[in-house]
Structures are given as structure tokens and as C-alpha cells.
View 1: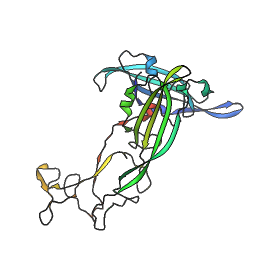
View 2: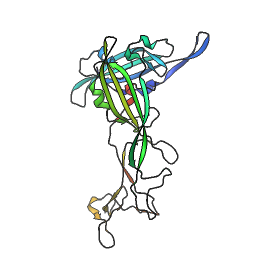
View 3: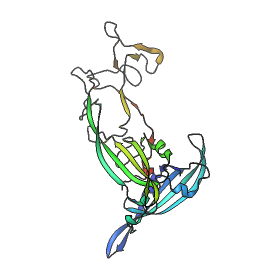
View 4: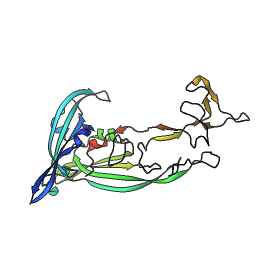
Length: 303
């Protein structure tokens, strides 16, 4: 089976029509989702591609509708990141809310996954308080403070086709979301763990797979959730500065009145940044430690 790497955002919308059912008017929703799948090998067949992790099985539920169709089409051969030649496929799944299905009669892969929410505590640096004030003493000297913070943990357990494709773990594990996921902005959800166990149900073998995601939601002084909360922020301070902006040849040691070395705030161009009262806090440098991935391509809900 292949590796699902992307999902077309344009395919998530759908059509709504009014239908009469048991003398009651209801809204019927139909929509499609398109997925990009990279094969494990060049001559992988359509059946194997449609069994890839993230492709909704026939009769599975998603957003109040049932998967009623699957179509797979070869697009083009590509050179994958590991240097091998693979085939790029496009898979289109159709959904319809006007379907009566009993989950007990469906195979395990078509059943609604189990979803658990919890919290996890950790400690982190607090450069600013909830009001946006920089954490410093009365003369503006920075103070290092660590505080406990709560993150939201989402665990999703579901049955998938066996065997589990380890490329899914390698591609998504230890990465962050590249777009809004369960309402959380880009870069605020970390794929903490993916675990898959061989399981037998009614004489058939499946992969019982758990996805564990860590939501690090942080708010600004106005109460808005800001993106890229997993990015590492480092105060732009140093013991040297540039006399001429951007010119490394002018790099000079920062000294006190007695000639001793000292640390000071820096601008992005390397020059000295004035402290209080001109500025309340140093410039923050950003370093993204994780790759971005489209978690929606795994069809992890919301359910």
C-alpha cells in the first residue's frame, strides 16, 4: 500500500439538497475528497493504493456522511526523497449523508474510530505574561521564568488494512500540521506518536492503529491563538554586535565601562538594540524544529 501525503483543500466542500425521508425534510450532503498517494513501488496496483492509510474505506463515516465510492488514477512517475522511482496516484472518494448503514454490520475498517481527549502538563519558558508584558525586573533586565503549561492531547484509535505501512510513521511522526487541524492553526499540533498492532477480528487480520497528537495552543494578549507554537523562540542577545548593519567584518565585542565583556540586545541586522524605555523586550529569533505535514490527508476527522 502507498503513502498518502496530501489532500486537496478544494475537494472538501460539497453540495446540499433537501430530501424527504419518513415524511421529514432533511438536508442531504454529498462531497468528494481528493488524496495524493505515493506508491511503495512502481507497479503497485489500484487495490493496494486504495488500502493506503488515510484513504477512507467504503461505508466508513466522515463528517456525518458515508464513503460510497473510491476511484484511483495514476498521474505520473516521480523520484521520491529516498532516491527511488515511485508512481504518484490521485484517489477521489465520494461521500453521501443519505445512507443508512449499521456499523455492527460493517468491517472494522469502516467503523467510526475511538476518539479520546486529555491534557498533559509540561514546563516551558515564559518570556511574556498573559498581558503581553515582558518578564523583567524594574530596570529592564530579563528574568528566566519557567511555568507549568497544559496541552490538549488527542488520541484516535481505528482499524486499518494490514499490514501497516511504516512509511506513514516515518512521514508524519514527529511533525506538525501544515494547515488548520481540528480548529488549531498551522504549526500548533505535534504528531507525538503512531502505534500499530496486528489484531485479529472475526477471523480477519487488521492493523489496530493509534494516533496521538499534542495540541500546543498559546494565546496572545487579545485572546487569539497564534500559529507555530512549536517553533523555538530565542531572544536575539549576544556578546558581540555589528558596527555596520549586516556587515560581519565590523563584528565587535560588547564591553562595559571597565572593558569587561557583557551581553546586550541585538536588532535583526546585528546592531545594538536599545533597551527600556525605548523597547520593552529583545527581538525574538524563530527556529522551526519540525517538518510540516498535511494531517488531514490521514482522514483523522473530526468525526
